[in-house]
Length: 631
Image (cartoon, rainbow, N blue to C red; front, top):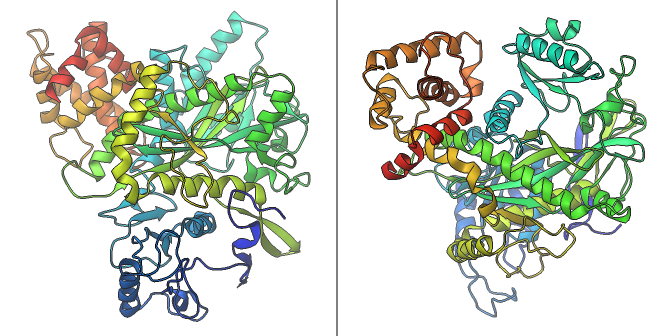
């Protein structure tokens, strides 16, 4: 079988059976004993990984590892020469990697980096977490999760952020379905649907209900009318987002499918975004028909989630990237191109969608970030791979379905050999895409290449100033996937393309929120918190010169108390949604009511989004310029 993704074949990982484990490949080259690391240096961890070994390495073995990593290595390693000293290898703590472990191991072997599968006492260069930033206590190096990202991409929080950007920039943010947040907006949902039906009797909508904390298709269902019993019965038990269902998707082989696109958020400040040149296309397993009362329950027809369709008898596992129930996105683009579709525009629209979505999330992400890693204090830097789920409509317009903070990076699938006996079998399509994404993410955050950062940033700025066209080429047209032309020996070119700041000139007008978010952080009062208390709120009002004879500081305090009470009455779990949302809402309500509406501040003030607030502020009191002066 041909090797995919520039690395070992699909059998290079571990093959597991329930109730036991059997080796199906080599280790990561990190042990001692009889094994040797690439370049002829003895490894130091084989004994620890061998069957029957203790779970943690001895201190002596750890010291030997450090000496080996830092000391001279004589041999024929490329570029080293006889008696040469090789640079210390990058160290990666994979003890919390969870389901991404196998793809990570393959990536580290290809890079010849040092893996610590059990962690170690001395700091590592990179920590690979499987769930969140808080999987472990990290005080240095780099970690592959941002604090607050899990909260920000939950369905309700994402819908709030994108929907309010739609209020600000309706044309630019028309890639997200019309949404309502339940239970708080259920009356609004009922009223708006009724009005739309009365204005257009031919409109026969379908709605999809997505539980806020759900994943892998859990709890998702379709309804034709707000009066659906399941909808009203679940309101108080499980907060959810209800969206207008996209009834006319693009079909391939008469099947509905979606796209899982991998996006690297390399940095928040400065904002740096990379997009993988390939992704996965995940297919339903029953021919698609537009939803009717009779077929609403047919999940294999309407829901593209892999975790659901894998249980269908029609699911096809294939080693070919062009066939089966899971294919590469590039194979779909090639097929569309052969039919005369404008693939360059499709790709351009998708990249635009990605950039705009991240711009909508970054202001509150920065609040979370400063809470966990206050400026001026020691702490790790962060990066994160996100999974964007995108649906192509019949007219090839991409629509955002959701964003995943922890996209599955598994490179195998479960196969039932006999009743009750399962085996994890390698998936070549998954390995081809996911190993490349992890490996090239590591290459981009390589701490030994930080000295090139300034040169690369300057190059990116020059490109963005001279090129106004947005991604006028598709992934197969020879695009640059890195500003650096240097490719490590033996490795393929990067599969990740920088899209921001490379195209910053086209999107910077959408980022006015970032400056006000920075101003908000400035007035938090206590570094490392997301809470803007009454004192900080009053300080903000005074410094912005927003108070006058008609609006006293006592009124500010009353507003603060009122909005806090109303927010708490919504029944939202602030531990999940984040305190930042509450305190941003307080700021919103004051500015919108006082500046735009000129209405009584306390009576019946309906909070709007943080992003809507920023638009009001920018038009009326020029807080953006003030933020520049203060910051």
